[in-house]
Amino acid sequence: MLSHSQLNVAGPIIGSGEFGKVECASLQIESVSIQVAVKSVIPGNCRTACYRDFCNEAERLITLQEHNNIIKLYGFVTRGDPKYIVIEYAKHGDLKCYLHTLRNSVITVAIETRLVKIAMNVASALEYMETLRIVHRDLACRNILLTEDYIAKIGDFGLSRDVYESGEYSLLQGAEGQGPLPLRWMPPELLNRGIFEPKSDVWSFGVVMWEIASLGETPFQTLPVFVFSKMLDDGTRLHKPNNCTNKAYILMYKCWLKHIESRPSPSTLLEELEEFLSENEKIFTNIHPDALSHVVDESQV
Image 1 (cartoon, rainbow, N blue to C red):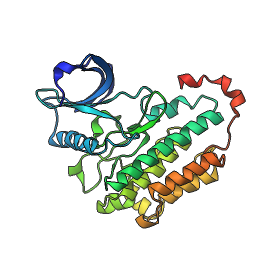
Image 2 (image 1 turned 135 degrees about the horizontal axis):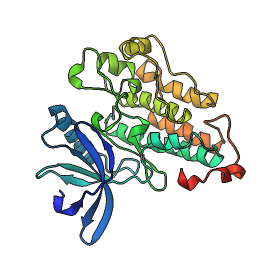
Image 3 (image 1 turned 45 degrees about the vertical axis):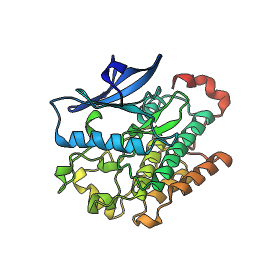
């Protein structure tokens, strides 16, 4: 348990919404000051669901602290207001924003390798979560954080929808009491029957791979939300992104098989991604050799 006196929440704000925000802060532990991120719920301006999500995230993070690809938890401030979840600071922000920075860059072999390793980090975290029967329910590039060494760590285990941009979360018809949900990342069994299984996250992992291959596009961007569930059930899937290899798209598509048991396990996904590295398989069809990496300063992306 931490106290307000140990925190200096001076900003900047990393993310914010109607009911909560994430800020940069420094945490004092004995004589050492550590840069951290703090997630809070704004006092007096939130609904019950927001506090529920906040508490869910705290509980999940306590359970999941034994893995290097889960965001590190430093502790909580629960006495007084605002209440905080204190987590490690991810220098390079979230994966979606990082992918956007690559859009005007030359994609070299080095960057390609980095992206495959990021996907492997996420699959490794899912493999660990599967052993604990924990389902994330909101796996997406916006919820994958990158440390200084570009190690990917899954965060946001509370389905804390309010700190993110509008348009990615929508109300599901007939389930308005749940609040907005990330429908475009969710599998049919969750949309239609409310079933949550580890392989429900595998579906979302396929969407994450699609986001990587499209450099951060929004999935099903033009598909109306009100027909989304039925179209998925009828077999509609995300198209192959431009400049995406067949092998990478096949890996995504396996994640989107309708029958849950037919989808690959996180362990299988990890093995297939390891093959990408060992056999020099690619996500992108048009990769420049590292000899051209001087065109973009990779330390800045």
